Image (cartoon, rainbow, N blue to C red):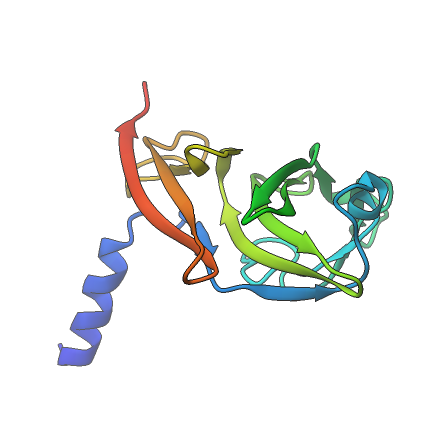
Length: 192
């Protein structure tokens, strides 16, 4: 076996299961369009673009209407449905921001995927300060503890419906770096 191919196979083996699709972006980005932390409707009727969307929506924009987006298959049946949860207003350096949880369910297949954004609303754009994507179980912000994200992780032998591990990540806002940084994480086995 050639050395490059052997290294590639070893790397793939370390990743675990093909169901592991979790990703995080800590560098700020922007999404065009007006929004307001004080106006929930502006968040429930916004166009979102995700940086890492392996399952859904890929490179496409998602235009929420009244807090949801529905994508149909060629027969007109619902294939994907995305909904936004209740926004949580938070404070970063004395400035209002918002924690958004969006979940997408795949009715035309199996599985679901979650998106977590921490964003500030500007006059003409949404500044995304944190973005996570994957099998997210929980996301919350506490002024004293920071941002907590819990997500599932599959081992190579796990079936699609039964991840064997849960990872919890803790992020804090760094005023000097003007972004979130990972402060710690923990992992636990899930009951079988």
